[in-house]
Length: 158
Image (tube, rainbow, N blue to C red; front, side, top):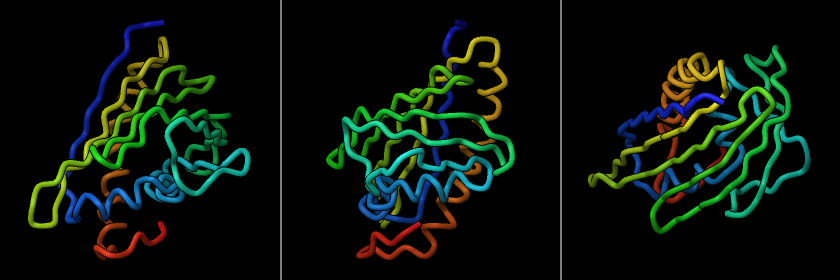
């Protein structure tokens, strides 16, 4: 396998960390912010909220058309105190997708939201790295759309 490539994308979100966090730890938020570019369909019944130590599996589709196979997501860290989620993800096409999400309070009700991912997919690594750039920018735009309707006291649904 080739070397891992790392990508990091940060955006300033107009919401306090707790507001973002309550949405971040919900599986339906992943489904919302990834769509319609990537569709995550639970492969089995899963809890609605992420918890450290859990493993979730999804049938992944590109643009809701092209099946990409079974995607496994292992939650290593789900830490409210530091607003951090760390996953180890993999699939047949993407053996290594180590994803870290951090939320940093910036005052005045805003936060920096950062996606950092290590990608390892052999000869496909460079292509997937390029796709990940597009995907994370898409996710951040969808997060901003989602947060426009958020209020500090509501976790809401995606």
